[in-house]
Length: 598
Image (tube, rainbow, N blue to C red; front, side, top):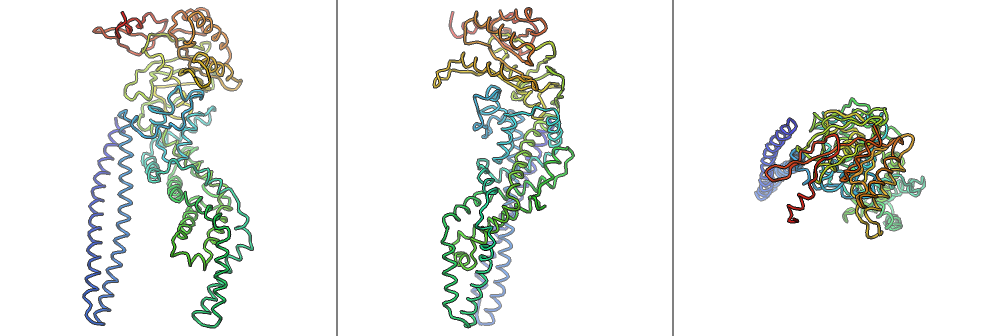
């Protein structure tokens, strides 16, 4: 696979670069030690006044060299860390292609919802899930955006088509996607919720935007510094005057100190995040895109005053750095003399008035580009997968060689063709033959199609449907609901879900499995009758072979398909290929015999 070879070459290149950087860092560390020793030796060789001046001058030169070496060491260390993360990103890409992506830490467990229309049944979140497989977002916003898209896929053709174009373009920009991942991993704050920052940015504090307070905070330090100079340097005025001003300013700092500390702590929490988000937006702005949707994301990165997002985030970063200074006790006199707290809060309020309302949009753009990049990785890793065609024809689903995307390198592909008047495929087959997997294969590929991603198929054309499933239903002891009643409630939601604008695609696994065969047979017939001609399309799997008569009773509306097993060397085997008609084989008795039930 070409993409795997590229990842492996990148890992090799970055590892060699890492070794080179490591040697450079070690050399600089040694030079710093030598220069530090040289400073001490030079100062110790002082013999007389003239020699002292010379040694002091030479020591100053050594100190400047030492400062430069410290700077170079920091730069090389930063590059070293960056390259180390790049190696990790490429190793993860290799693991994804080898099917070892189930070892990734981020499974999206926090997004699991057993009550969701399809995500729980289709393994969208959790261990071995779609999210765990594709997610490369490392910020809170990016993870949340990807999860939201996978839970609420798009329902209009134009939006899906725009996203397809964007994802296809991003698939060709491997460096862009990897740099995005590196920046996010360096941030390493995927669990930090930005809602507090956004609410802070949108909020207003009239005290620090008041013209009188601003004027007082600007003028008082000038007066105080002037009186200090006049009293202690020029001795022109009484020393008590500047002291009175200092006491007054200290009083101002004590007033509302707790409230100011909370305000500072609230914004300081996001210091590192602001740095990285600024770099991500800069990366986005400096990349040329061709697709319409990516252009929309990259433009408009400015506030109402025309200031760019990068510039404004840089300003906020500088302001937060100023806030950090106040935590140093040595900085306390400066805070008193210059009313530093007030200066910072006034500038923060000014920043909020310029960019506070649009900050959320900037952060959402970062989340969206991370989500798109995650999906773009699929297109890059699997260039032979199809970009699905979204048709405006109703009740249409057609795919060639469609397989389950999460069965890395182990897919068994089948065809599917549903179009009017056909509405329902009734799928029979013995245990473990592949019925449930086939249902999930169709469902998860439809989901990928609606978020704009490639699908695991040679080609696929589909109408736009609302996906609904009823597959993993268990007893709810807390609510006193049996699995059968839970299944009825889910099917009730499916029946109610259709409307005049959007059709429903349903996946029912082992329909009415919680009741007796007679009631199951009657119930299935009534359900099929109710679903006919109302904008429903879907697949129903069952062990109940007697339901096969529904094809004859509902000609052209229902069609029977089945999976089957075969036996080789006294072992049960499956080919997982779907065939027309009702299943002719059973394996339950054989499996019972295998475990010792004669």
